[in-house]
Structures are given as structure tokens and as C-alpha cells.
Length: 357
Image: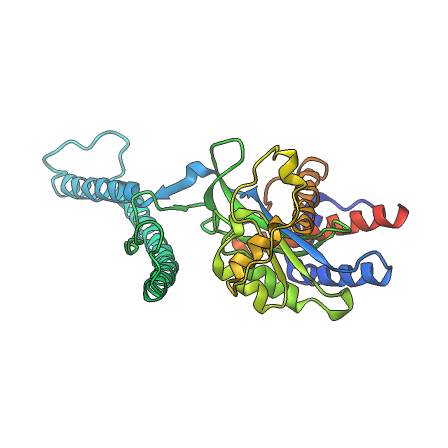
């Protein structure tokens, strides 16, 4: 009786998920005590993980209104049929009260789904309004300084749900997300901050956002909370999906040098461009301009090039070798705990490689 049944393992994981999650940092401390880990540069990226739910169980705002109207009409028709049962023939096998109750249950479910979509739309509008106000304030300051802002003025965001806004009836915390290779799946956005020297995961969290712009701040919060014995993080490296002026400033406020790509990387850069001498340092206090200059230096390019060979192989091995492509549990809290467990397993696997190297 040395091999627990899969149901026993699943029950243990669900029952002690929060306690197991606390072991994540303890594993990092153990790696430090074994002289396998000392923090320096962190590469951050995200990968889409399938939710334990089908995208075909998603209900959109527009479709919910159509189904709701249809159900209400059917209820009225059934009520009329029941009232006139002495004069109209009820189809064989039809239980009118049961049919009415079934549709009323679906209407209640529709109301809950619509309320959830409205709640998400309000949260989205709040974020979009903050971004709009920040952009408007920046353009105003440029005009006040006598500079002409580039491009058109941003349009204020529209409040309220859109017809395409959806909620999944199986796992309402999951989201429809675009996946690599094309198409859309019901997914979570799993984030990992990986040490460039050891390829150990040092930060991890799960997001419901399709893009990565809001994932820098949660990562910085985890970095700041790491035990001092692990060492000091000097640089955060990301692709252009994480870039925003606010994220650059957030890194600097946390005492970390940002290396966030401003645009998509160009492949096969000319050889003379790759070996060109560094441009003079710009005489400005603009943090984005300073970061852009650093990205263009020989040292900055060399450091940024570590990103692909650091975090992307971790995702590939977790999915292809460890075989983990889909959440087993439902809900954001469970998804977060499961991702912590998976990344902790990766770290233990990585410690064995580093120990025997």
C-alpha cells in the first residue's frame, strides 16, 4: 500500500492547497542554503493554461438577452396553455408545471450570469478610465510645455457591457483567451518570473487578463516580499506585452531596473547594427527614454537576449515533459494554488539538475 490512489492525491491537494502553496518560498530558501540560487536578473512572461471548462459553455451578454426573451415568451405561452387546459389539447407527455419551472430556473441562471458580466464590465471601465485619464494628462502636460502630442487624442471609454462580453457557466473565473497558433480557448494566464542564471521560478501568479500589461505590479509585490537571504533582484526583463510607462516607474519605485521591450523584437538584425557602438546616454530624466537607451546598448541587448532562453523553456518543459497543460480544479483561487504547486515541482526538478551538474 505504498502507492496512493489518484483520488487520494486529488483530495489531499484540494484540502491542503493553501498550505502547500506556502512551501513555494521555503523551497527557494532551501535552494539558497544549498548554494544553488542567488537572485539577480528575473525574466517574466506568461502562458495560457486551459481551464477545466469548455469554451462552448460560455454565455455572452448579447446571446443572454436573446435567450432570456425567448424563455420569457415560452413561460407566457405555457401559462396560457395551463389556464386554457380545458379547451386546448396539451401535447402527450408534457408536464406544464415542470416545463415552466425549468425555464424559470434558467431565467434565474441568466440573471446571475448577466450580473457577473455587468460586474466585470464595471471593473473594466474603471481600469480603462484610469488609463484614459493618464493619457489625457500626459498629452495636456506636453501641450503646456509647448510640444505637440503625437497621434489623435484618446477617446473616453464606454461604460456598460458589450455584446461579446462573456461568462463561463462551468468556471466563471476563467476567460476566453487567444492562444498561440490561432484560435481561442477557455483559459487562465499563468505568469512566472524566472531567475536567468538557474532557471528557477521565483514569482508566480495566475491572471484573468488576456494581455500582460497588468502583471508587472503583482510580480514586483512578490519580489519585494521575498526573504532577503535569497539575494537582491537587480533587473526585470519582459517582452513588449508588459510595457507601459506606469510599469517602468513601478519597477524603479521597487528599486529594480526595468528592461521592458518597447516594441516587438525584429529578427535577423543587420550585423553592423548588432555590433554598433553604444549611442551617447540621453540627457533626460524620462525613465522610458533612459530604458530605451539601455535596451539599445551592447550590455542591454545581451541581458535582454536571456529572456527567451530562460522563461520560455520553463513553460515548454512544464507542458511537454511534465504534461501539465490544463487546470484540474476550477476557480481563480484554486488555479493560483495549482500553478504554485506545478512551479514548485519544477523548482525541485531543477534543483536536482543543478545539484548533479
